[in-house]
Length: 271
Image (tube, rainbow, N blue to C red; front, side, top):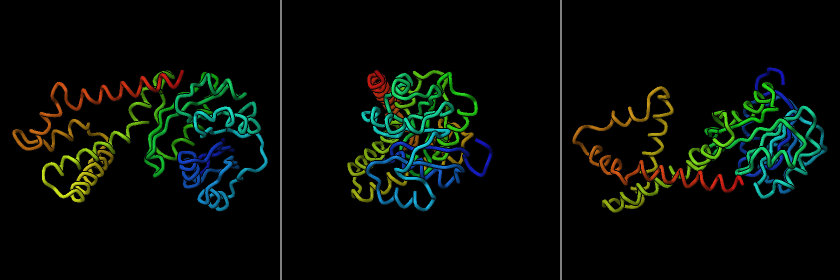
């Protein structure tokens, strides 16, 4: 795990569905230095092309790797762990992105002690994701650094101090993109109710969400509440709408309930 142009070390990726493939493409774009093995029983043409282009071994011979990334579906943990076993050595860190599977669940199926539990989100597919992560006590600083580099290839990474916080991460950022998409959907529907043609309302809502998100990205030091205040003139149209959002049963309370429900479900899935 020496310094290089990109993350440096050997990796085995177990499962190359949407998120696994996003990680692999991120490693390719970040010029990961070190052998990469991919295990995927049903490789897509996109995966086959990526592996051929970058010299990644697809469903080939196995050998211990610095990191093994488990990216199978949660219900496939057992078969995924079986596929991962030949790649796990004494110094391997296992990075799991399996929703709802605790470190204890992973440890029960793989021989590694160094385990990182991570929760990325779907914008990872375009390199704009955010991942919450927690490392087991047996994970060394170097292993955590390598795991961080692998996850950071598809967006920002935030480390938490308690594994239980991953359930809250799941509820906020893991599921969060769906909330934003639904907001855009509802905003467009409200535009139709207000008299706009459906196609125009959809374009306006979509561009508004995209632009507001980009504005936040370009002003990382500015709190969203300040950005909100800047576009809210006293007594104006935006203020009238925000009065509805800020009501006792408005958006803030609705989001609290939604995140709480998602967290509860994450806890149930975690066992």
